Length: 58
Picture 1 (tube, rainbow, N blue to C red):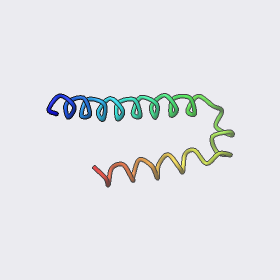
Picture 2: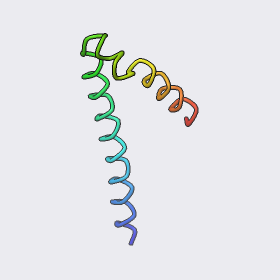
Picture 3: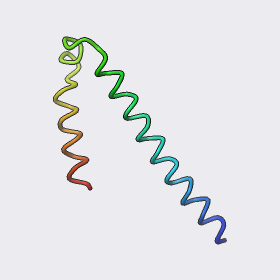
């Protein structure tokens, strides 16, 4: 039972790490797009709102 808890904890943190990695990769890709396309998809506004939400969550 104890080893199952350890594996679940490791899997949980590995999932968080993978999500963070995917977010960073996506942001890098979108930032490489021309500014006009970023504006069309609402990137600067959505990015600022998401960053503010993350900061509030802690």
